[in-house]
Image (cartoon, rainbow, N blue to C red):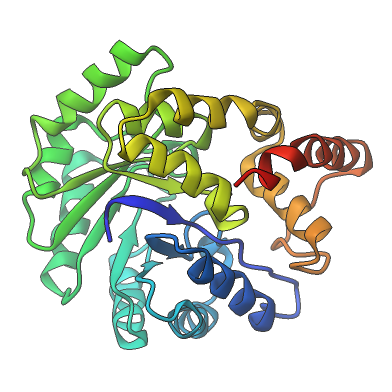
Length: 300
């Protein structure tokens, strides 16, 4: 469950409510594609913008739609008491694991973040993935803090930001973290443009935004890296370079939202206000890139 491709689906949201039917089909198609796990209510899933009741219902929908595929459910919140409530709901829904990022308004100290994970793991009956995402949380984990948290019971994986582009630097970064965490805790790379490099540098999993939309091409990259085929893994990633450029310019969530609309998977709007979909010129660029990538998608 904490190796291979973990696909993070978009949650279609309007000001009225969540489109549970569309979300269910998005999750179901990931299960049919054969991803190794599904990360519901991650950052791509807009968890921070949803009410407890919406999150509870979506956890149930995701577990039901995923079938036999394990589902990780995001449980982050500003207050520990809220995280514990989300954790209780996720476990009751049948989640195979929970995913926790240290959300905050006031900046958090290392001891406060450690205390959050200690409190949550003490109440857990399923594994936990540490969600290290400084781009959204504005909290930066040290490797020493990762080591302290990874030693807690039920911590099963650490989701790290993108590894360096240089292969040797990527191997050194993964090696430094590996030396500080238990051997049974996996390391998963995020930041989709770095997926091939991270997996080839020794990461066990790819926690993927694009995997929630285009699972087949992401599985092709992941499986190549798992069988130690760097040429194929790097080639697939290089083919997707125009999309990675859009991710860097507009943010992966907005780009995935636009592509999901184009594919007919979701309606519009599908992002929680004040977030907005891409404007016309940017949307046309996305459409052009998707058209250019059609041969890449057809090969997998």
